[in-house]
Length: 363
Image (cartoon, rainbow, N blue to C red; front, side, top):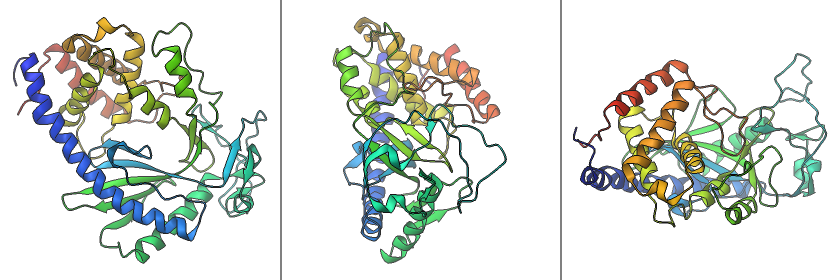
């Protein structure tokens, strides 16, 4: 361990952060080639599922949660002209269509129902009972079809030696992908992309906020949102395009926001929260980045790396200590709600030790 100096920061970035970027990019490349091949086969078998593109680490359908843990959204075709639905109805069924009489929790802030009638144009296949119950598009049914197609495609693409479907406690489709250097875990999520509007649940930006600019806000909202099949009944709101737009041009004023974020991410992976499936992912850190940028919107707030970095780590420590991290666009959502509190407390302790004596792990 060495003192926290500018020279050490540059050394750390060159020898740790850049090396990580190279290794992750290489893994992403290998995984994308395989998943692109599989989704192309799935799309051939069922045109409702679109093949993902193979465009590297900046692919908007590809999210790096940890160096060997990825989330890939698979776009769904044949649903266009989305509009918000005002009628609230909480209907619950088994996957086979039988009504459940016992109470099931209502959708959370980041979730919603989805009816096929909310789209002005829809393929006939979305009206079939294999995915539709009394007008509701049921995520569990979509996932069941996707999982079956994935199993068949692994075999027909002769990829059984490289790809295997993992057991999951939820309805999410998880696969293990063997690359030349390591094994990666991939969550595959069928997703309805809605580029035409902004959801009412995302009451953003908050009043009188100076970051981002009003021009940037309007641009971000014009990219719309996604609905992800990540649970049995409800679709989960996603904002991958909006988040990407927020990050693009983040330091046009010459600031060090992304530099702070990248070093924080590296320290998280190396020291504070290690492992292939950490309790804190890159996505959590991204939310911390957005909240810190909003609280400190001025250019002069991001001239000094040390100040900016420690500010961001303090925000992370506060969120982890309180077991509470608000989603940036849907603020009623606590992204740490279902996290193991003992694991969070362990991370909070490591962050507290770092803040008492801020040094970078240069070994």
